[in-house]
Image 1 (cartoon, rainbow, N blue to C red):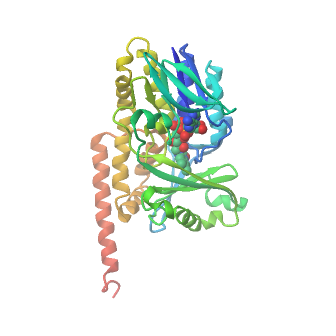
Image 2: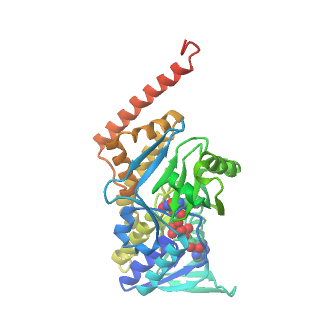
Length: 398
Ligand SMILES: Cc1cc2nc3c(=O)[nH]c(=O)nc-3n(C[C@H](O)[C@H](O)[C@H](O)COP(=O)(O)OP(=O)(O)OC[C@H]3O[C@@H](n4cnc5c(N)ncnc54)[C@H](O)[C@@H]3O)c2cc1C
């Protein structure tokens, strides 16, 4: 089979590699090999185990997280043994994944996919080459791995998914100040830096990525929110050298089926980003791999059921993680008190380990344990609410 993959980010590259390894002709069309996707590049330890990513690509392997509550309270928690979040430079990381695809036999083509036409059992994929000329190539299947603005998804599904937005500034702090962060990521849950989600600082060797995510309605406040995040962490960032500031859309939500007929969508094009954390690299890679596995298993004989098989495979593995994390998201970001409670939970060593494991391994807790956490959460929230109400009472302190 000949499969065209539109987009050579993490999703497309892993898909092309898996197809080529299975002996199929995988054509990976990438619009801009030199591009550096606006991204913090924070990756969970399970990704490194699953995809054998070379150490050379790691900018920093963090051993813990500093959680900052809306009240300003900072709590430091260590990852359990063997778990971590590591950071990479996206240009290097994506180039490595594309090289690995080529090494497995995939063909890399420079070009921007414009769309496709269906012709019997084949697709005719149109793309514009670097010389400006439009060319076509035939395909049995097309993978839409062309990111949040996916042309393939727009043509196939009729519309793009709803979006949120992420913005970051890469800063080289004054070296002495790096000790404020130590070997940790920092997550700031104050609604002042993001009324919808959170702010982050990821260390990347001598640099850090400072960023926030928010809903599109707040896009006019983006720069203000990021500046506020920088002010709140001036103990680390003051005097630092700004390297670049950039941002991009992040899809939120997924389609009912992850493709149509001979087209499968992976990664951001399919909406596989956890909106609670803005994390999408692992899910792009895994969905790319699953799409390839579905094509290998069903592509030759059962093209009629390919999309539903792929959707089932994704729904069995990825969707439960999304449902689980969206529950946590709904509870955590519901109110300022809940944000405060979420951070305060990490004061408890056992809870901290559980929360950090969820970040680094994507494990989900069984329902009874989750319910226990929810009850603890509610109790703490009530206690904190009462404490706040009492402390705001005019008679308080008399
Ligand atoms: C500010 C910010 C910070 C983030 N931080 C993190 C983080 O720390 N950790 C994490 O896991 N996720 C993070 N994300 C999300 C992550 O960047 C994406 O989920 C991930 O890149 C999705 O991978 P992908 O392969 O689906 O798409 P992309 O990485 O977007 O790759 C798509 C590729 O397709 C190419 N392309 C686009 N259109 C075409 C076309 N028409 N034809 C051919 N090629 C095309 C592009 O050049 C690109 O190389 C962040 C996002 C933002 C905005």
